[in-house]
Length: 339
Image (cartoon, rainbow, N blue to C red):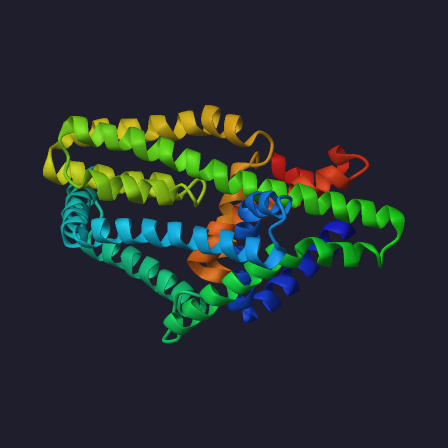
């Protein structure tokens, strides 16, 4: 068992190093897999009604792109118009926290705080310079990855079944059955994740928005949008975006109201983890918190913000496929991720 773990660790390490060298291609491919999983059903619905594969794939992809563009056009002004106010509120909240750290029970010095902040800033900048979202070529990489993802999605929708059949025909009967079963489970898990995380994000954003509105906090819509998209980074994103809501409430309304929003944020996260996510995802996203944290961190270090978004669902899919094709899922190494 120990040698197997070491061998797996070595393979994962070197594989990770290779993939980070072609981060744009890797991320574009993974994003395309997510999009294809979500759009597969409507494409197949059109194809069963006689619509040619190319036309049905292109039509569904174009419709999805128009919906996405519409959402972005709605969201961007909401956030951009309030960005300065939000930044100012967060800065004031940080000044209050800084004052508590110095004059409160911790009795830190200004130099201590500056050193901690500088270390954190250097670490974040180091990630940014090596990731998909950092450096002078960020815009070019993003545009390249965006169009590459669309092209890959189109071909997966149009020729995905044919490509899989071609692969299965080259494998032994038992291997072909496992590969086909794994592909089916993987596609279903990806589609379930994309739909489910939207439900979870909407749940978080709605309840926190209601709390902000009740206590009279400003920027309700922008903060709710940040909470919604924060849900796409499990364990970390929604809570961090919820803390932004707390900071804005503290600065603009008061301490009591800020504590109320904080309590609501914690309660929402707890209820989400214990009730909403098990109902929406079942076993699909049942991972140990440590696995989630390590996955998000590794994805962020290797592939930037997109890596942090995509790491957890990919781990979940890998575990689900392993459980589906293993003769004894209880003894599978990937099953350890379930905790």
